[in-house]
Image 1 (tube, rainbow over the protein chains, first blue to last red):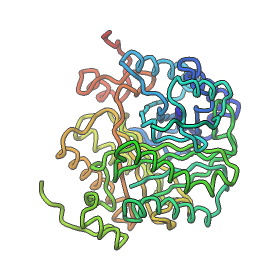
Image 2: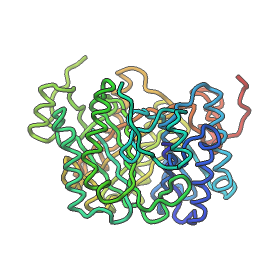
Image 3: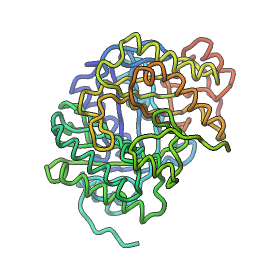
Image 4: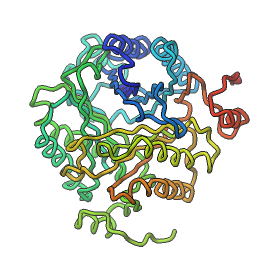
Length: 146
Length: 146
Length: 146
């Protein structure tokens, strides 16, 4: 559900970097709200020189990140600031500490307009969500009629 | 207006597959709410190995779909569930039945912040929208002063 | 903050075109609401033949633009229409006047879920935002406790 798109200069990250960064991003969600690991999707996109522009100038040392949150809405100013802080902390070793410029923004999209493996994801903190987290896969289940 | 981004492993789909899948996606909107065909935009993006990660691991058999709905808001839980069900049905022959893992989520964005061919799209179910649908092109028209 | 993604046929734009178009897009925000230039990010994405489909058919002469507005919400129908009109005006020399088909839509995303260079962007029209605009960079500052 957290859906991350990470745009980087070409070859900024090795496959090992990408695996480690996507693990770090996954931990944001598993450590705080116990999301199933497999909810966390990260897409990396190499951007050749002269395809990213900032303020009208080519930005060839720039990492731009766009995120959709689906499974959880961030409730309250404190939680929202905390989430952004932990995101920055996880990104830092791969971005700030390597000398890249960077920017990140999140959107929140409707949970009911989301399916994984054709299934309606179970409601937040339900027993079924816990099972999905434990097994790290979308376990088919009966959706209660409403 | 429905704006689809489909991320797939490299060469997952032939041009024929893409045309058929985009036709199937188009039919979701033309068969239910009579949208003009040309409103339906589908972008396919080949993702090389080690550019998609799920739960911190490379996901090289994964199809990820992100959709923006613009021209219509889905009103009511039943309609929303129906829309997701028909989407899954149309995707299945290209995704599930070919053995890919997959996930899809939709957002809804403001109709008034949308232009096609520089024109303000006519309001839902107006005569002008019906003309656009019939001619399958954005027919220029006078926008009523408000 | 305005975050633009521009999908074009391969090689539709030269690096000079992209710089000029991103400058034109930047001017939309600097001339109207005095945003810092560096807030304006434009990503260009070459789309090979048979990767963009409109109404179920390949669209190989098509420019598709998706925008997220973050730093400002557009308040009121008049402002919203004005913003779309100025966007069309800036795009025209690169798109309409070159014979491309095109479509653009915007979303508005939450300002508090946005960081640039790890910093909380200052509030709209604050003195700090004016300093960021003047220096065209994210000047570190103390965030007031709330």
